[in-house]
Image (tube, rainbow, N blue to C red; front, side, top):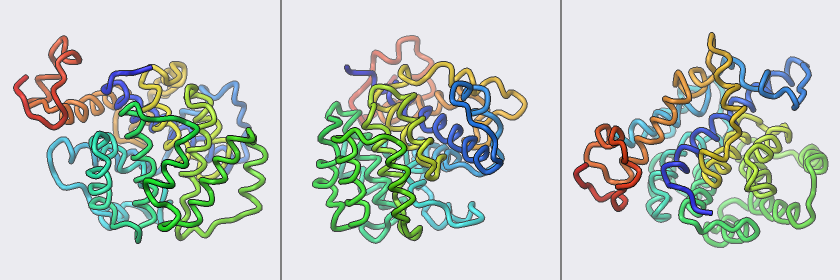
Length: 319
């Protein structure tokens, strides 16, 4: 089933936000030894989160793309964290780049390298490229769940750049074929610790969670978070993939309602620097409008039928 590109842009950003917020709250409850009843996830999963979020960096990246400004380099962003951030988080920070250049995989790789670092030296760039390439396939209607891992391995030459991640992705393919459940995967994670220096495990786990149920965003995001491996990052990546594939309409409505019930400390304002879901969707529309080639995106988005007059990508035309 095909979805509007604008709805996929919205879905990717909102899915990432929902996944990161839910993952952060889940991590906080684990640390505080509080119960996590999944039947009541809307009540506890979208509360206030007092920490730096990758979503803030994603919004900054989006702003710079829309304004045609250089995207921040890796060192400049790292200064915002008190400790060394997880490498897989770069896939969230560069999500707008993946969306903006989804129609041209070569440009996608180039701009990710410019924002993060040259491949294969930068493991974080490789993780972002894997997520970006998967998004690209989904938005270009070339995504096939059972053949995604082999295609990633071949097209991105992952084994030569990151042998451990290549092995993890092969594990994901095996888990899918054998329908391995969460309990078994968590046990394997405990028995096979990974060096944090080049740890891209959240990328593999997010792909496992997404590919297991690609048409059910709620299950994909919950599975990613329940694996208890960097829940905010893994949840955000699974949410971005699910939202891009199933579009904005495929995300759980009751989760979105859960976001709005904590009006005194809205979690989006803490992790994504935005006051409301409407603002996040507006950012997604701005990115889509610039990608579409609108000469004046602000005016174009106010047109009552703007979704019916999309130009060719990157070709500037009057509104």
